[in-house]
Amino acid sequence: MSLNEFLHMGGYAFYVWTSYGIALIILLANILLPARQRRKLLTDIARSARRARRNP
Amino acid sequence: MMQFFHKMASPRYFYGLAGRLIPWLGAACLLFMLAGLYYGLIEAPPDYQQGDSYRIMFIHVPAAWMSMFVYVVMAGAGLIGLVWHIKLAEMIAISSATIGASFTFLALVTGSLWGKPMWGTWWVWDARLTSELILLFLYLGVIALYNAIDDKRTAARSTAILALVGVVNIPIIHFSVEWWNTLHQGSTVTKLGAPSIDISMLIPLLLMAVAFKLYYALVVLMRARCEVLERERNTQWVRELAEQK
Image 1: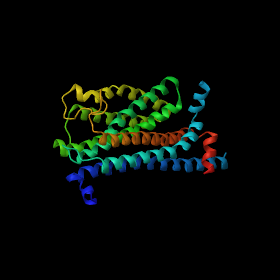
Image 2: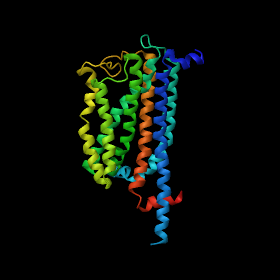
Image 3: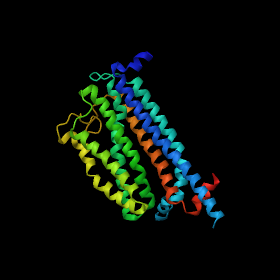
Image 4: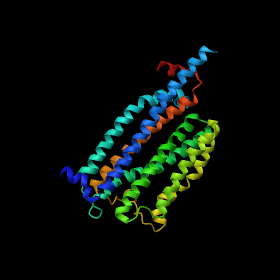
């Protein structure tokens, strides 16, 4: 099977690759968003903890 | 035994344990997914009726299975949180909602992209498609309700009840292709007797199904860790943890 044939998907390239593309985007977003949220929460909590210590 | 469960369910212990599990789950998920993609897109032959379009199945079917599985886990965790007031169960329940909604959306979109070339339409209001759409609305309702209530304990209890009521939809989705005449085909794997799907297509399907399960475990732990930080942000250990970073 050549690369061209593989990408062509027997004429269904649009449907097959759009499906896999959307799946990739959704799966990646669900990993990246909580990872970013955790980093943000940790900096946030650290900042308010420092503030609380300065002005008790 | 009860002591063991108590220790497991303490947010602090869970946070550390989940942190250690996440890299392993990620690696295992990636491995199964790559194997599934290889066998599904390269090794498996084209279908004798549907040509190459059937390869959408390797995403569509695991996503649809997970959309129901995650819902049952969410409702079950919600019930445990309601009855025994276990905070961790509440966190698992709400963490599942976004992932479940993602899987449901993915199942609907890939189904549409598969329906257009095979059925000639993007969408029909038949029983299977409509009940899956209702599942998406249930997930969105759970997420919206949780975010609408400021007190997290109250929010968790309310969403658990909503999720439990919605469980009635799960058997409807599963049996919709048998109870009603629908355009959607019947099951070829989870029926009594031997699966009627060819082994060369069954192997990548099962590999992808395992990959999606591992993916759910991975993401639910990541999200639940955020919930722990958010809810325990005023405790000593969370403050110390945040300041170490």
